Length: 76
Image 1 (cartoon, helix red, strand yellow):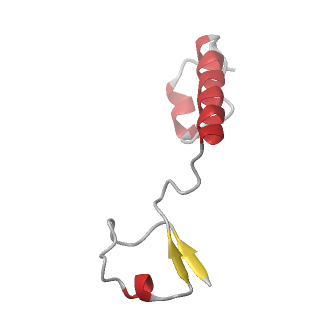
Image 2 (image 1 turned 180 degrees about the vertical axis):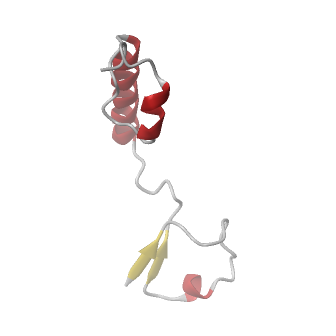
Image 3 (image 1 turned 120 degrees about the horizontal axis):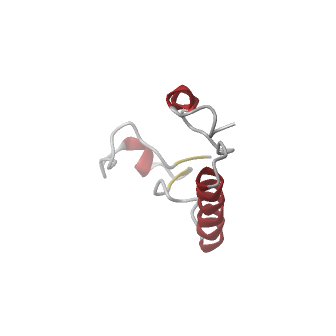
């Protein structure tokens, strides 16, 4: 059995051979989304924004290379 939520080409061709297999499940890329995960995401994003507004470096940085472009005295 196998499952995918991402295909090389999106949207997936309805005639894709995997979609015809009995032991395969395809879900939208948002298959892991739920009401609770949405609430947690909003809380996490708000907490990160609050850190930045207070002059602190955020905990979840996707692109740390931008740190050198900020004023060091403020973001430590």
